Length: 318
Image 1 (tube, rainbow, N blue to C red):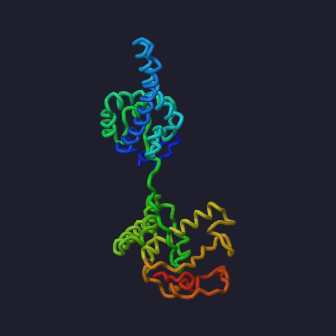
Image 2: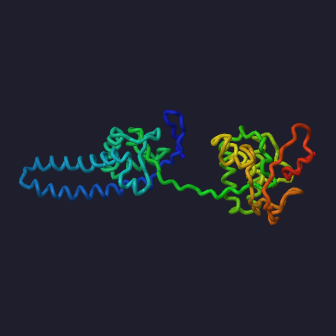
Image 3: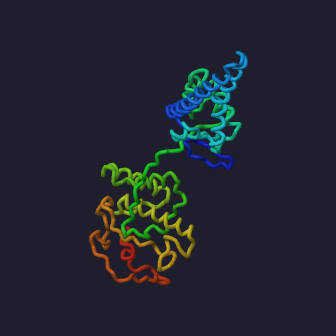
């Protein structure tokens, strides 16, 4: 990704276009422009047959500058950096800060493009693009622009599996403020693709991510809880907290009929990749679900809990 920073100090994740895609876009543009130039030149040659040599030369130079230089500049200015070839290849010219280009940017790129592309057959532009870390030619360097990819293939992340029912709400008091966004992204990517991984490889990755998450939160992974189930439970806890902050205390995905702070109901059984490490008292995946309405339990005002394991399905170590 390109490390582009806007004037508001916002980092942009833009992928710079490389030489093959840029060369193909330039080739398409040149084919269209040269075809129009040939047609116009033939028409002007027939129309200026009665003029002298100097007049015909002036008309030829004017048509060259107008069609091969002026038209690409006008197209990039009006389309905000998307010529026909760039549109076909999914590319776009932007400023260094990620904003759309203006006429002065297109003018500098077009003027230097005559030397880089037309007069040297693209040799100078290719060498400059190979030397530049972001694939920029001299026109981009002097104009302060960058050619980026608009159509970036996005990796599809599968459905995030819900945690086992006996882990629902177990980590409601966990401090998640110290977990960086990069670790959250790794965990979500793993949970979305865990069913596609080799079981041994997936278990190793889950244990590593669970260790990193436990180190960031300051709370170890509970004994007997599979690493994948621990990751899923913490990710859903974070999602529920964000939903409560976004929708307020009166609604949103985290609120139900029992009140805004009630934990979400996970009716789906634990997927097979969580393992068979359910603690005593946890419902089995094939156990029938009672159809009677759930009755909210009111916690006592004071005094220790009588049986913590019956409420969560997980008995903490002594």
